[in-house]
Amino acid sequence: MKNNPSLKGLLIASAVFILAFGVYFFFLAKKNYYLVDNPTPNTYFYKINNGSEGIISAGQYVTVDLKKGKNSIKVFDQNKKLLYDSAFEVNKIRGLINIAHKDYYVNRQFYGYNLKKDSLLLALDKTIIDGKPYFGGAKHFNKLYTEDFYYNVDEDYDQLIKNIDKVESRSKIFRKQDYLNYYKEYYKF
Image 1 (tube, rainbow, N blue to C red):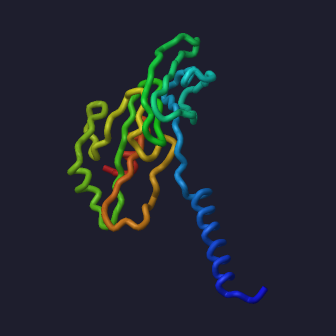
Image 2: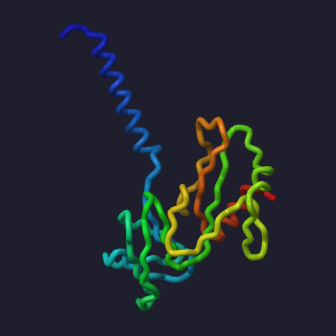
Image 3: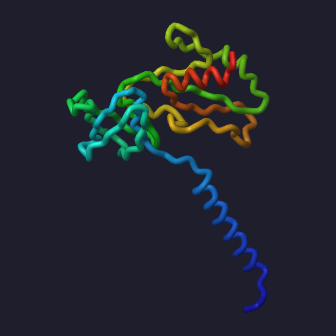
């Protein structure tokens, strides 16, 4: 076989292409999954879509498999007494099941070049938590299921979003106390 520069270039380009996708999928790609979350001191048992029984202890979250469309959940207390039997609709690729119907907040964090955080906060709605106003327009949530966020309770915001020429945002769902801690640390009022 002759020394063919075109073939060498094609092979090198193919190897770099495969390596780039490997790095992306193993290290950079955001995983899509569904969580059952329990921010309470109680233990719960649950069955999703009449499958096997799961247990979630105090303060834990558990990854679960859900199908797109209608899903059902049965929730039991620590004595295995039925608390509720409910259904919910799954439309997106990540979501959170609020097994105890506790307070969560979906916050939107803004990224971009020349971002004026203080004036942006004042322009957004206020959220009242325990009688105190919080700027930034976080949305309150306490229903069984939500999928209206980008980062789940077990993920952190990215420190930097690359290639942004304009102001963009990402949303994250927080447990109530986690949101209050984040707000105090991030905004430093």
